[in-house]
Amino acid sequence: MPSIVTYNVHGCLGVDRKLSPERIADVLAALEPDIVALQELDVGRMRSGGIDQAHAIAQRLGMKMHFHPAVSVLEEHYGDAILTALPVRLVKAGPLPGLTARPLLEPRGALWVEVDLEGHRLQVLNTHLGLIGRERVAQVDALLGPDWLGHPDCREPVILTGDFNAPPPTAAYRRLRARLGEAQNGQPGRRQATFPGRFPLLCLDHVFHAGPIAIDRARTIRTPLARIASDHLPLAVDFRITAAPALPRDAHALGAIDALSR
Image (cartoon, rainbow, N blue to C red; front, side, top):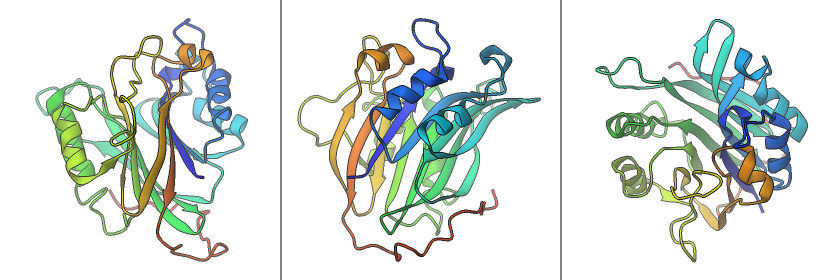
């Protein structure tokens, strides 16, 4: 059964103040996911020893990766990535809107890839939204608009995942749920929080979906290692695509980057 994990890795800095991409990779390896969406990765930053964290984690997992820097200063980058061992192509990576009146807010972005999953062209988008409610609403509206989920090439099945900084009662979450299914919604038992990692209280990380996707299980990973490796817990979702395959198993042209104009 296919699975996806979304995980805000906090620059691979654990709650014990230990910096370790290897530990993040070990948390993920134990889950054996097909697709991984990561947020808050450092690439070439002095504070994390100049390591390309996205590449290091992908290499340890035996996966390919696409990285989008939401923030770039000279040779230092900070942003989000999608990892998978499946055939994949980058469709688009770009910024999301902020607030004109607050130009110093941290820039936010999104990353969109197409994954060949058992003959299906699965669209996967990863993002990390802002901390202010009005900012998140503007970013959600952009994601739902014609450049992202509303683009003609963003055909179902679709998964939109990441750290939305938006618990279920918030306006941004409600906007997304009006258009998309959400993995934890309808699951038996209480909704599982993802933040903070040691004593999780808030549901900030989500897996939204559209089209012929059935959710079999959604769970927050609370292993001892996951509870210290980052300030968030990973959210793992097992799912099925319920439609017939859209393309033959061997009919891939998914190796090259084919970015849309922004």
